[in-house]
Image 1 (cartoon, one colour):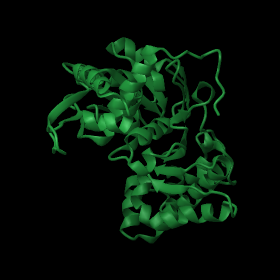
Image 2 (cartoon, one colour):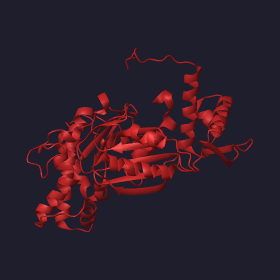
Image 3 (tube, rainbow, N blue to C red):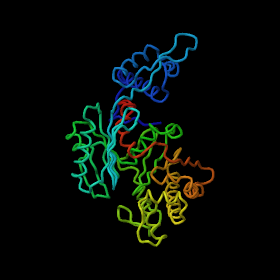
Image 4 (cartoon, helix red, strand yellow):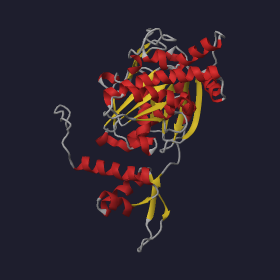
Length: 393
């Protein structure tokens, strides 16, 4: 039972109840479309008149539209509803150590425009390019906000970057900088938190219906997003989930972004897989990670060995998360999941051995998001506010 925080509590009032009912109706349309008012009323036990009033408001806000009549079940044919997805409503900015992607999407998260450029270590250069593209995308579009995902520590409340180890960015007011330049509200979050949020709202039912899961993002580093009771757990100043820095061994193939050689990230990241491949092939260099995955799928033994060893270390870290948190599921995302049939057994072997007999394990799933998960995470920082609302935030 959740303890009430008396310093933050707000008593329920008619507006609160109305907001909750509004979100219920909107999410029924989002997840069950096409759907009729009568079906929503029957499944929610809300009055038909209440449903009609809410739908009228949602239609006026441009969130829902009527699309014609459905099949009759004995009376008048019902009018069907669906999300109104005409035009761009959100912009997502996904900053990675190598590439920054800016995209606009409709209400359903379908990407409409996208542009990418190499991330510059100088923040003013990268932010300036972001602002330029945002202005271009938002021209003559009803953009309601910008979501920014960042591979490092951020404070979502203040909108500031606390620390991005790849660039040594510290205490940068990124949300304020972009918002002042574009006139749009900006929400920022750690990239793994953002992808976990996207899985919660836009993933397939096997993930979306889980109330407690952990998302493990395998990229240049390792990030984890924690979902507890249907919401992201961020901790103090957004610092929760830094499990990439938990100690899992020693003398890793590459140093962690923090400089140590014993962190999970140093054993289980894309960089570690590339280092293993370089050592096995004896070339002294390695391709980019996408090429390594392609070589693995083509059957190259050194590539497969490097990737499966990396997957084994991913499994070691996940086993610790399962023992500590007992989530319903653990979701793995990143380019490595393209080789899922080849790495799944190496990844799950350690998990199956480490979870004690009689204790619950967790489903291990690859990301269910279409396209680029981290970009979808950035867009979700804006889109979910339309579906969650103030009452559920």
